[in-house]
Length: 145
Image (cartoon, rainbow, N blue to C red; front, side):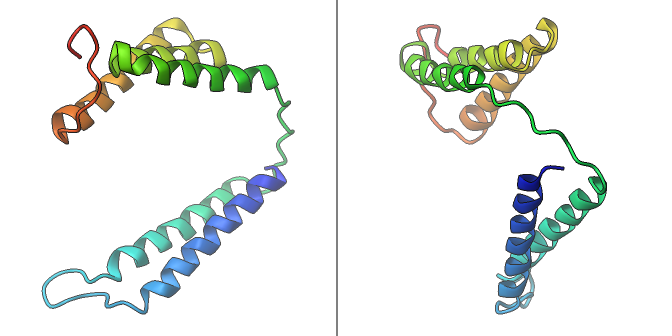
């Protein structure tokens, strides 16, 4: 585990403890339902537990620092910019699916079959949740989706 990972996990743990502490100032239960302090208490507790599990599972390991690849970073940023530019003329689903495919195949170098399945499935899931379930209007392309 690298130093930055330890620091980040510790900060998250401190936020969890802060949520637990501040939630005690709110009522835990109302007359017939959870009060405003119920959710912050349990979310804070969950954060603390997850941080402890993270530290425990990485005890005694020191991961080598990954090499910094500016070309990889720039390909992600430029791909995202192209995706944002294509959402209006092509709709939401096609550019997002293509961007995910690009990330999975080019950046992460996963196999074609897995990349296609994950990109298509994720794009369809996002469309289903936001457009069909939550009725959030997403940009539609020339194909009607």
